[in-house]
Amino acid sequence: MYFTLLDLLRFFSALAVLFHHHFYFYYGYLGVYSFFIISGFVIYFSLNRGIKDYIVSRFVRLFPLFWVCCTITYLITVVYGVNLPLKNYFISMMLFNDGKIASMVDGSYWTLTFELLFYFYIGVFVWIFGTKKLEWFFASWLALCFFSFLFAFFTSVLIFSRVR
Image (cartoon, rainbow, N blue to C red):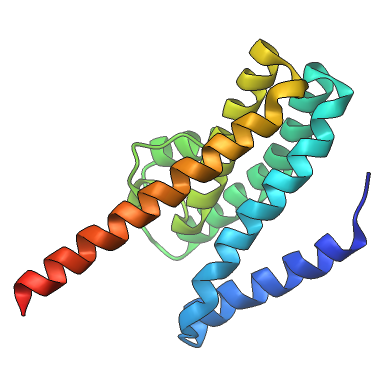
């Protein structure tokens, strides 16, 4: 299933992130969150074809273009004399890192690491429980995110009130 409107949403999300980084547009960071929301929406429909097709489609969608971009980025760092260890290049190629953006070839690839983890979690859940209970997983995930946001909000309010 293909949704044309999603391409438009992706475009505006990319613009928001670009404006955030280059023109200091404050709400541009929301573009990253909209990418994650779009990914979650698309994943739901790609799971109906079976777990093998899901794994292959996610791999083909994510890794080949990422490998090209990662290689180009690394070669540019070599040309410009940035002393980035070759080990970091290979670790970045697998989308694994130690949780530090600085150890990746390009810090902007951090989002792909989280996307890969999300694909993995959804895949494991569907492999164990099937797609019929996927709505419960999404509802639980949404509730968990809401309460962690709420907790962080109240914690920051308490800290701010103590500072004054």
